[in-house]
Length: 115
Image 1 (cartoon, rainbow, N blue to C red):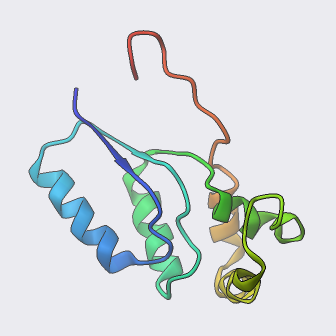
Image 2 (image 1 turned 30 degrees about the vertical axis):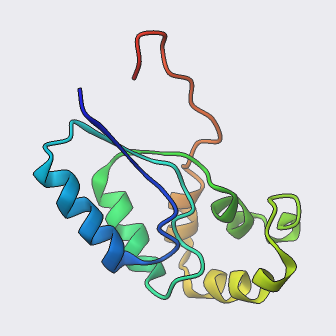
């Protein structure tokens, strides 16, 4: 079984599209998203839509968690200079985007035989 791990898209849908094209060429069986999907970049909603369309397992990254709980950004190790960017990103997202982010899992345990 081929598994592709993707992470740290940070709102860069164009780069994600290139990665997904490569994954498709490699005939991967399963994609797992390790989080940090929709902060920093300027294509936040498109990036989220691409991830959602995959129907893959998504884990909560620290930036994802900070979007959902901005008052805890320091706890999620978001540096103070990043806070204005985090605020801007949050204003770009719709409630359905936040609802999708809330489905991300904090932890996944693989069975002893693998995923």
